[in-house]
Image 1 (cartoon, rainbow, N blue to C red):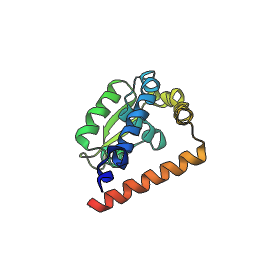
Image 2 (spheres, rainbow, N blue to C red):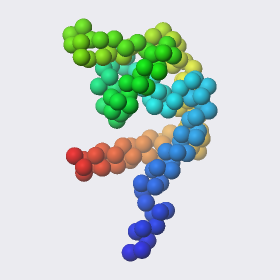
Image 3 (cartoon, rainbow, N blue to C red):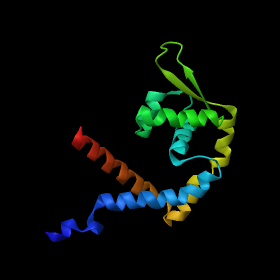
Length: 145
């Protein structure tokens, strides 16, 4: 029973510390691009699908608009995105990549491979692990909904 309260047995601690380790690997790669990790995630999402609304991007990234809006303003100041009001509904803000933002993708293309290499795992194992973590996240989200 006492083993239940050992820090090394906590899945949350393992995930939390793995996240910190991932951030340490990402940091120099993203510093070279002038991006923070949340900014990188926003850019990856926009490279995947340009012209997303702030709300839609926030849902994908699990970020509140109060966190996302300043992040997008910084990306706009850096010249990577443009924020535009929707023609259909002025309350909706659409995020579009600039030419500079599109060019940044070419500089970032090798980052996933660097992360995979740092993990020491093969592609099949990383895909399995990612799927398990997503399933865990979804189960936890359902438990509090």
